[in-house]
Amino acid sequence: MAKNDYRVGAFAVLAIVLLRLAIGIQFLGAGIEKFDPSFSSEGFLRGSNGPMAEFYQSMAPLPHDWDTLAEEPWPESFNFDHERRYFGATKDDPAMIVREVKTKTDDLGFIPEPTEAYGPWIAQVAKDWKATAEQFKKIPGITDEQKAEIDSTYEAHYRALAYFAEMNRGAFEEWHHELDRLEDLKEERKNDDAPYMAERISDKKSETTGKWRPLLGGVGIEEDLYKSDLKSLLTDEQLDKTSVKQRSEAILNPPAEVKSIDRVVTWFTLGVGVLLITGLFTRLTSVAAAGFLLSVMSTQPVWVEGVPSLAVALFPYQGIEFFALLVLAGLGAGRWAGLDGVLFGRKEDKEG
Image 1 (tube, rainbow, N blue to C red):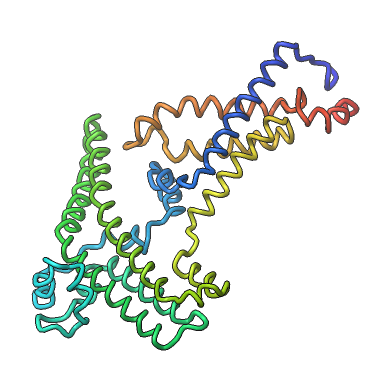
Image 2 (tube, rainbow, N blue to C red; image 1 turned 60 degrees about the vertical axis):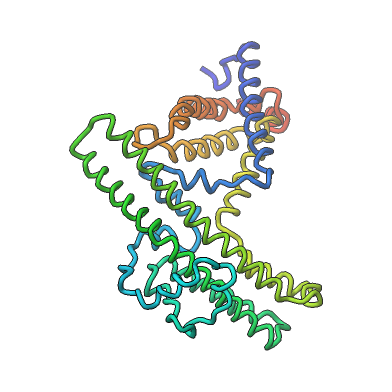
């Protein structure tokens, strides 16, 4: 049989074109939606499950190495009773007293270093804040007086950070306890295949997430205040200089890895939509889109415990769309009512 002896009927051609357009419109709409400033793939990546969860979650790391440091237990509080008396005296007015009393000079004792009292994550936050202050002092044109104010600003917010950690010691300890309980449930699951165990593990994961988010958010609020106070130390004259403004913004708001991923996803989905609608490079576009969709499905494999019910409900539809894209790629669907037919149709006919 000759290469092009087969023929595709008019109804089949219409169905192929409509399928290509439908998927293209869906991708185009998804791409346009992602131009919303509030769009972020962080929650999607952080919520991954299954064997590739660690890989996807690493694409959206939480601040200050939270993933590797926050679960480390804190030292026993009684080891720091002398230092912690300071906070008992200031807890009624943290907004003023904590920021005004100089570190290690008040009569009640000194504020403990984070590495000593509050575990490695709080220590990493303080270390990163200190590095930010040191970078800020290197901005061209910063005066000696401003450098001293930068140091004072860091010390004030460091004390506020230590205060927050002290006041939330119980919350951190409770979260660590829930993490231990989650691990115990996973061990029990190995010896008990009852369906209710999977539900208990899923509920416990949600519970532990609900406990750490306010803690991370509280430190994030203080960090925003810290950065705002640093920026306020720059004069209007300094901010009028492009080099100073750009340098300060780069220090205070370094680009997050997830932002790059957001841009790639936005333009990829938008590009897939445009190319499928116009029928240009349809084979390559369909294969790339199928690969992208497969990666999305791999973040929530339905056979893994703890997968959200919405992901389970969407999985079959994603699977159908995945195979539909392979059909478009196999048929070269852009040959009909598409630019592929205009640009490459004659060449294929000659080859046939």
